[in-house]
Image (tube, rainbow, N blue to C red; front, side, top):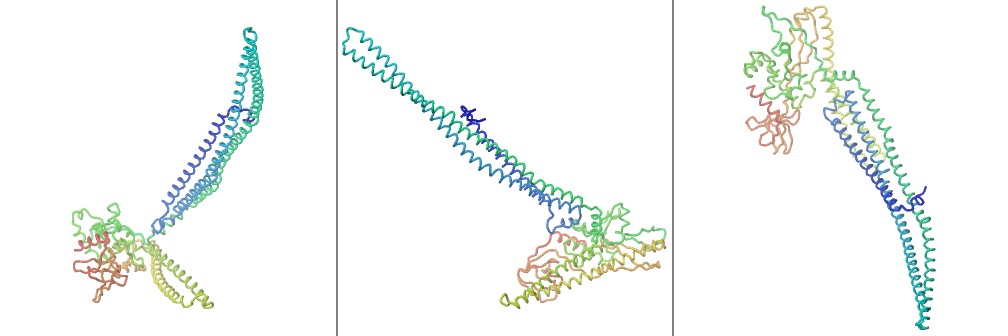
Length: 606
């Protein structure tokens, strides 16, 4: 089946059909190109989605990823990132294997098609020229034949007329013979031209055109095969990434199966366990007899009587309430639940009543402790935290310091080896050049070891207290089983401390000796004032008087007490250096929240 024999007279239709084939190929290229753009856009959106939900570095979100469910979600995000990468691979492969290749092929195809149809038009023009020559020869032969007939008739007429001279007859005869000869010549030319045309026409329709059409047919068939191969490649590109995408989905499934609800529950215990003991039973107070009141106004009993718990101010386990408490809400929280009578009383009257019922030093230190938490200036030994959380933080600090020590020791070992190399090979470097750095590393290691000892001492102290509490709880359980009435008597001596925790005192009415804890001893030492902002020294000040501090121009320091109108601002350089400087010598940047809190406290304390 050949186009040259079957479609010998369909030159124009073949030209249209081959152009349509090129249009289809270009349409497929455009389709693949848009598909690659969609894949790239989808991959970009997936990556942005994964990045959006990734935990931010050095943020609270990182702590949440210790739970198995959160880690599984993080693994899902990472796998989705890889999943997006496979769609990028699809786009790249389709661009290189299909779009790029087909674009080049279309250009070649257009050139080939143009060449074949140019040859076809040339052949057509040649046969048309031969046909025109044949027609001209035929018309000339026909004209000469007619002229010869007219000349013959005229000769016969002249020959029959007796009145015509012999010379005229001879002239007519010669003219007839000339015309007859011209007709014979035209006939011979026409015959020759006809034979030539028939030969050219035969070659045209049986040799030239079939050959050209055959090339066009082969070109079109190659185009069809090429577009079919491209469609296979289109599918194969997708098929190649299916195993990797399947792996991504398998990893997501594996991450989901790794979620351990029991482990997450245990992590919640480790994260929030305070280490405090639960409160004991509340005794019945018989007001028919004068008895010692066993519970303060802000105790747990008042909260239970109201049917809801009020947040306690400044407590170790309630320190996180501070960011949400502003101005007089701090004092409201400290004073606890209001009775119907107290609701009508002014806040200052309730505050004075509270200050007379509790030692002032405990009240204000509780306020300072809560403010320290608010401003992010907690004590170094984490004494603002509950025992269990304090132990955990101290352990983390010890581990962190040990890691720092190991890093410093690794650097020292490396420098020591380098120094040995320099000593053995002086041309490589000066051995004395590393002595200064070695001395610095030695000092750093010594400082870090002292820090470790300090935090280990605090850690041992906390662990000792926790073990003592556990032992006390165990003994208390045994004693309660044996002397329930004595345990009720002990409950009368338990008080709620101002910071939301509570202490246990030895009962003088029972014979049970419970080891007393010194957990509340941390209130005995005066704590440093929290920072309420920062300041920049505008000029150098030499603090020579007692209570002042020297500062250098441009130095940045912490503000712990603003100017009260006397022209002096109290600042701090570090934990051991603080004092007053003239307010005009510094540019102060106060923290707005801290400033509002202190103003509120000052107004109420007045």
